[in-house]
Image (cartoon, rainbow, N blue to C red; front, side, top):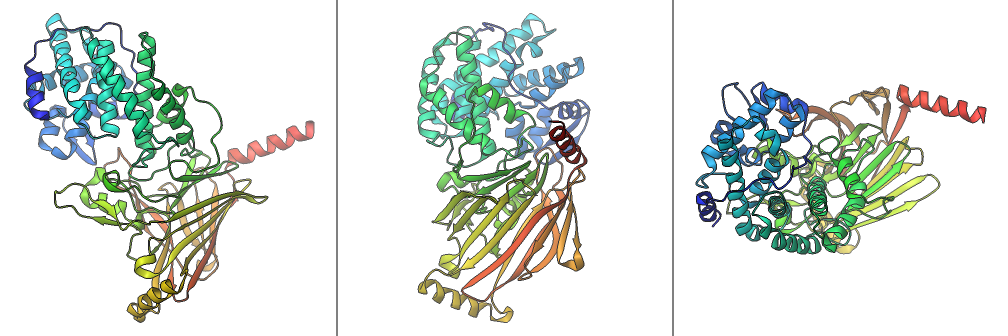
Length: 567
């Protein structure tokens, strides 16, 4: 039906023009814009180098990057560069799209992607039309009108979530910005208000538990609110309330370096995007101490620790979710230290599946077994998480020594009779983290299952486990103190030391850091504690402590001490 309505919209003859000058609201990256101008096409881990190709040649020959290119987010990067070469390239590609796809008979006509594209075309409308003749302007506006007509017919068929928010925002944007499209505004605004009530929960979260996806939704709601306000339209209360719920949640998902926690398919976000969205929301005030979309955040000094403290998403919402229960990330000032590997979706199916498994996260696991299982589907769609932990508990306490997080999940209880419990303590000054990971049986039924598990691992003397701490690529790590500790030096010069109680074998292994905008996964390292669970309770204690500050931090501390003396 999308294709049917796309063809109908592609034949429509509707004249329109901008009602007022659109204001760009999306943020691009100058470096990416310059890469595109130079003929370096980097999308979803695919690199093609050619100064002569159109971006639509890349999309045609590489279907795996089609949606990313069709959304036209690369227009933000051209606008960030802003010179004549960037403008001319952007104009050439947009009008090439009209020639190739504008009749609705080919790719790029799904509501979410069309909504994203319409927003970009309107945002950068004057940038795209500068220096163009009247005929080019008419083609541009007619194409916008056709895409708006398509959105008005098909947003209702889009599954709730980010894509539907994009489709509705694109429809509202077009209705507010283009002559003759005003009648599309009321139904789209009403639907957006309804989705805000249904899709944004009372705690400001979404069912996918993807932090970056939540940021995208907040940005869309901010743009819609601003556009409606500037044009004298009323903003539904439910939209304002959704923004008021989301903003504090995102603050609870922000690390000390202003990046988002990288869980359940989300990345850290484009630099500046989170701060801009929070500022535009107009929502002020401190973050509360509870969970934020199922994540727990501890702060001390210049250090943040964010842990996955709830059950993974379920059903269709788990299509991009990870088996990351009880995993944590740690950032010191502007430098990430302990990380998740991130989403491998942009690097192909194998990387996508591997990145979703428990070994790609900084947590404890039964060796070779994820805390949730990725189940293949006969229709070829993304795997959903099954056999998820059914009971995940979290408790945050403030004490004299710092903030303590107590966690547990039963993801291994049915198969191995073991519950994973984790205790994390971040000191008040943020200079140390103390951890304790426990694999334990809770009752006689668990003991029976565990004893059977031990029997199947008789050759190695117990159920094998691994406790992983993935390091950011900018961290240099080496075994220290005769192999009993790991010294980790951050790019800033700060030094942290990892120690443990000797109950497990300590080692350094290869790891990867998966990041959008990179051609390949970035090689890095991971600290691994490994051993075998032979008793009804196995405990592993470890610690991270800062042994040396950054030069800037030392200078700031000295200045503070001097001011105290003067006072």
